[in-house]
Amino acid sequence: MGRVGVVMPLLITVALSLGGCAESGSSCPRLPGGGRYCLQGTSLVERFEVQQRVTVTFDGKPQSMIATVEVDASQMRFAALTPFGQKLVQASYDNRNVSAEQIPDKRLDPALLLAVFQIALWPESAVRSGLSENLSLVEAERERRVAFADKTLVDVRYTVGRTTVGELDIALPQAGVELHIAPFDDLELK
Image (cartoon, rainbow, N blue to C red; front, side, top):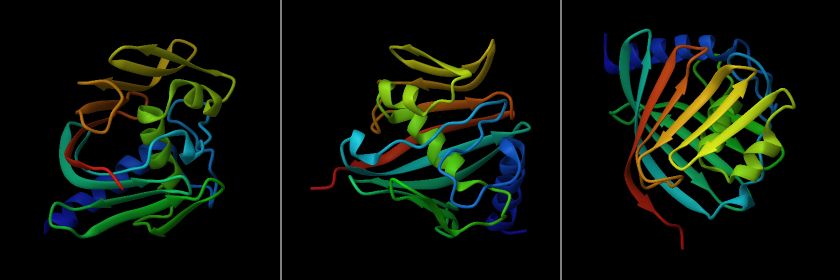
């Protein structure tokens, strides 16, 4: 089985554990464990483009992929690729709707991928605005946590604060998923 043959089933399994079926075009995905996060405007952050090495660990099995994220005032674009460059997922958010140009399984909600990224990097006030009423945000210097009652839904830990230049770890404990993200480089758009 080739690299794509290994990564694709893992990505689909992770997607199913994250929340079941996708709602086409919805910009308010369900978070694993409860509540929703509504995507926030892309003008709330500086424009950037970054390629990141992502190690996804699910059920004790790590798999690597490459994520490319581009954000400007009009939209956010995300693509996940195998280490050999084959596209697994491509999604975008135009500040109104989420669209997926390529998705390996209709049960994978592309908005959830974008939401997790926003929860990690958008300003605290924007993340709070995006959370449904039953969720809380706990903020510390090198950590951000979204919780439902006493359950952690998303736990983000930073090496150098909320920037695209440092490494970060994102855990979705209710889904049993961990992501370790490290940038290849940080290309600022001029």
